[in-house]
Every structure is written in structure tokens, then in C-alpha cells.
Image (cartoon, rainbow over all chains, first blue to last red; front, side, top):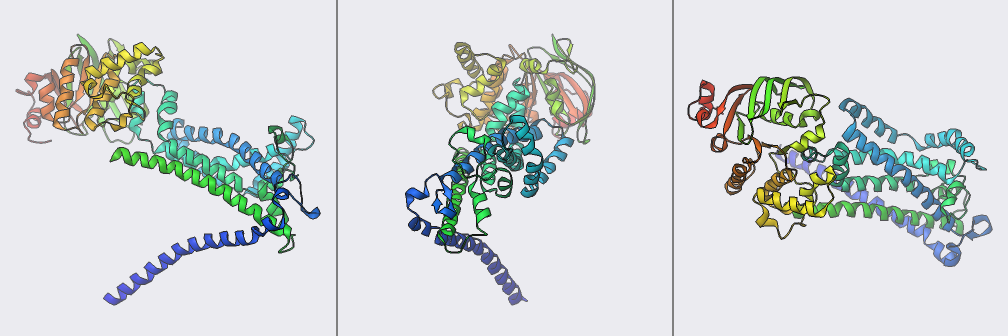
Amino acid sequence: MESNLSWREYVITRAIRASGYSAVVFVALIFYFLLREGLPALTEVPLGDLFSLRWYPIEKYFGILPLITGSLIVTIGAGLVAVPFGVGTAIFISEIAPRWAREILKPLVELLGGLPSVVLGFLGILVLSPALREMLNLPTGLTALTGSLLLGGIAVPTIVSIAEDALDSVPRAYRDAALALGATRWQTIWRVTLPAAKSGVLTAIMLGVGRSIGETMTVMMVTGNAPVLAATPLALFSPVRTMTATIAAEMGEVASGSVHYHTLFFIGIILFLISLIVNITASSVVFQSKKRAERVLS
Amino acid sequence: MNKIVIERFSLQYADGTESLRNINLTIREKAITVLFGPAGGGKSSLLRCFNRLNDLADLKTVDGRILLDGQDILDPKMDVISLRRKVGMVFARPVVLPMSIRQNICYGLEVMGEKRRAKLDEAVERSLKQSALWDEVKDRLDDPAIALSGGQQQRLCLARSLALEPEVLLLDEPTSGLDPISTSKVEESLQALKQNYTVVLVPHSVQQAARTADYAAFFLQGELIECGEGKNLFTTPADKRTEDYVTGRFG
């Protein structure tokens, strides 16, 4: 009996450890293949050409700057849409809505987060882009703005869900104390609740924005996919092509091992680095505030 | 002078946990009135009605009247914000807001729209002296308030309420988390404060009730059993239940 128990103990411990290590191994493998397939691009394409303004891979122009700026402008646009909207919704759900509304809204918003992005892209093509073309009198409705609005919509559920958790975990006593001093509800939210939940809200924003950088399907469907440098904010109203859409659209047709193939993987490396930076920034913000809390408590 | 008059007041929470039944009580001006009794008796609930902080809770029924200077504060048309400036509150656990010591005290004044630096500085010094904290913090007013000790934080919360120059001061077990020295400091400041303020205190022990009370009211399971002058109530209670509680037979 005893030996049987210790044997089970042994197997379970090993199984859990193996699954834990496998996650690390998979990430390492992904990174290894990304580097192996992508780094040759640096030797095959001169650095000056790689960071030039023309992306016509058939004619051997491998300038990825238009793709990077395309991703950036769509993501920044999405952030501008999603942050005020998402944080506002989180504040409404956690601080203002009556309890029954909160119990409906929160799951509903989280359900929205599970909506396949291809469905959103479909709505974008059918509804949003014709509407934008009409309203703003543009030559085409497939623009960076269309992508930004939809990506914003994708980021909102993430932001709402995490920011609401953070606001909700601010002790009741803070609100009571501010209200008892004669602060209005809005003053309490703005000066007390929101600063107290700052690190959680920042994490929410980072994760929401991080999600919109990596999003592929929607932007491929609605941004028009023209590899044009987005140098000014006005580029918001013209078609752009993002890094993710480029990889998704061209990877299927590229000859394995060609310069084009390696360059696509190189774009993947850049994308990987960008989301790594976003994630590190997010966790360091949280880490900092944790350290502060520990210092205060000790 | 009567400051607060409670008439036939009843209250029930939606989840049925705690309630108050038909409370009639008068709270005198410029004196310490102590509301005491075993936990769950409705003392804190009543206290939180005086500044309408119970508005946020899930209430099933509220009935009767609470008059502050003759005005019914339960009236839906009552300006709750100005009521809360007139009726300050200190909670059981010190809640310092996530800002500096000075900002904590100025917060109430700033949300009122006070911007003059001189006025704010004056309020900071006055209220910190009133709560016997000035000497300990005067050199580090811009430090984060969270760095203060528990007793200091609680006195900071007291100062924060006093900065608004309220007429009534509500204290909900203000010394429950404090050591004996801090407790006696808070109690001393209360004795000084009652010259100018109406103080309503929910004490954390019968001993504290007896030490501080000018007037006292004994609550048991949502009912007001007995009220009167402190020196009578703690020595010769009229009701058997009060006597049992005061002498420590239960509770």
C-alpha cells in the first residue's frame, strides 16, 4: 500500500514537472526556428534595402518599413479607441452600474472577447468600411482607420475584463473614506479608486494593446493591404499593410528557403520582439507596484 | 441642545443580516455619545445613516426620521455631499488614501474647491494639532501617508475629518486596531474635541464606553435597550440586560 502511494506520488510529480518544462521547451523551440529561418535575411538582403520604403518581394524589393509603420499606426489608432472606451466601461461596470446590470454586463463583455476575429473582419467589410467611405468621402473604405476601429473593438473586452477586476479589488473602505469626506462619486473614482487600481489598469491596457499588435485576420480583411509608408497621422485614412497580414497573406505562396521566405520570418522576429517589449513593460509596471506594496507592508 | 434626533427609525438590509427596529434617540450637542453593545446590534449601521453612507448598501426598508438641527437627513432631496462635509467620519480600520500626509488632509477641502495654499496649510496644522499628531509628522508632511504606523494613520484619518471643520464627528470603533498608548492618545483628543464638536462614538470595548461616555445608548440585536447619562448607565443601569452586559456577564 505504502509503496503504491509513493509510486503514484512519483508519477504525478514527474508528469506535472514535465508539462511545466515542456512549455519552456516549446517557447525555446519556437524562438529557435524563428531565428534560424529569419536571420539569414540579414545576410541575403543588405540592411539598407531591408529598412527601405518599398515592399515588392516579386521584384526583389524587401523594404519592411511600410509594414512596421502600418502595424504601428493601426495599433496606435486601436489604442486611442480602446483605452478610453475600455477603461470607461470598466469604471462603469465596477463603480456605477447597479448590481444586476454588473452581473449581466461583465460576462457579456467577456463573451465579446471570445468572438472570432474573422467574424469582426466580415462585419468590417460589409458594414464599417462602406459606412466610413460614405461618411468621410474616401476613395476606399479599406483603410488603417477601419482596422483601428475594429482592433479597438477586439482590445476592449480584454481591457474591460482586467481593469474591472483591478477596480473591483480596491478596498471598499477607500471609497467610503473618500465619500465620507464629501467627495462626489466622480471625484472618488478619479482621485482615489483609479489611482489605487493604477497597476492593474495599466496591465489591462498593455495586454489589450498587445493583443491588437498580434491580431491578423481582421486587419488583413479591412486595411486594404497596400504596403505604403504611413509617415503622417493622415495615413490613417488610406490603406496600409501590417506585418501580421503580410506574413499571413504571403507565407502560403512563398518558395521555401528563398530570400522572400527568410524575410517573412525576419518580420516574425520583429513582431516577436515588439510583443516581448510590450509584455516586459507591462510586467515591470506590475512588479514595481508590487515591490512598493511589499516595502510598505514590511 | 439636541443635535441629532432619531424618531421611530427602522432599517433592514436586503440580505436580512442586520437591522434596526424602532429606534428613538437624542444626541446632545458638544458631548460624546457612545453607542455600545454586542456585535451585530446595529450600532455601525445607525452611525452610517448619520452621513448617508448607507446609501451604497443594499437596503430593503428605511423608515422613520433622523433630524440634524431639525432637518430630516433621510429626505431624498437632501444634499448628501454637503451633509457629509458637516458630518465627518472615522472608520474602524485606518484608511489612508494613496497620497502624501498633506494631500490626505487637504483632499476633503480640495474637492470642496478650496485652492488657497495658505488656507490649506492652516487647516493641515490645525487639524493635525487637534488630533495630537502634529509633533510627530510636522517635518515630513510630504511623505506617503501609508508609511505612518497604524496609530498615526488613525489619527491622520481623524485629522482628515477635522480639516473640514464638521459639526458632528462619527467614530466607528476608531481604536480597535490600536495599541493602548495610541488608544489613549485618540481618547484624549476626543475629550478635547467635544468642546467644539458633537461626537458619536462606537467604542470597541465596554471599558472604553465607560471611560469616554457623556451619554450612552445600549443596543442589543437591533433594538435600543436603554439610554441616558454615561455615569448613571454604567453604574446603575435600569434594564437587566444592560446590567448583564456592562458587568461582563455576556458579550
